Image (cartoon, rainbow, N blue to C red; front, side, top):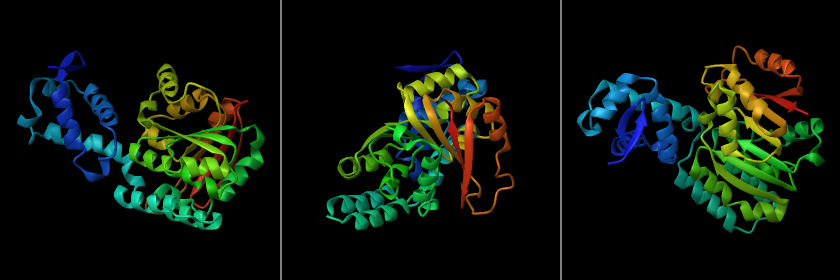
Length: 314
């Protein structure tokens, strides 16, 4: 029997597999990889010697009604929901069907752009900025030198890469990273089309954002190296820093911004809640103070539901 060592206790891989199965029974989590779910389970168990002992000494099938197991499932699902569940509106099969139809049809450029908008409507995050993508990138490239940007890294991308036809992004390598492997597969379906029409090379990388939720700079550096081992010109982090922090510490965001191997970053924050109510503190004063302390040049602009920081680290 194989084991995973946590807090000097051996938890069987069978127990871990059963925990993952129980957590992913819920439909919204079925497209998240087992490895990412396991990472979150281990983080939770490490915090509690009681949980460690329980899962090391008892088979999951014998404690299905225990409050500890129920709480474990609840807590891990809560984290996964923040990362993934809240962004999805249509089920995967429906989205795949629509995308297959778009890829197979012979469309003019305006027709293709209209279809892209329909697809962006399927994802809450991209839906919010669907009419603003062109303006957003125009503002970004009025601040940053577009001619110097040949590589883009998009962390927690969702369907952002599919907005390329609505922008003036071209002649770049675009690295799309997200927790959801199935959504990355859908993005990959446009790889040939984007290369042919816009000279954009799409690369996809599955990545668990919550591996960055550490105040330890060495850990952040190591996790970022798993995401990219080369310097990129521009990194996009739309509406995900506060999800990574999970209300822990702004030191996490600082370590990410400092250690992303990128000259330029565009970081955004929501200005409205998921129920479309205005947030109390939208300015993110802590972000201004941090960037000034680090002596990074930056500009800000705001669209309807989103505040953008355009950062120059050079």
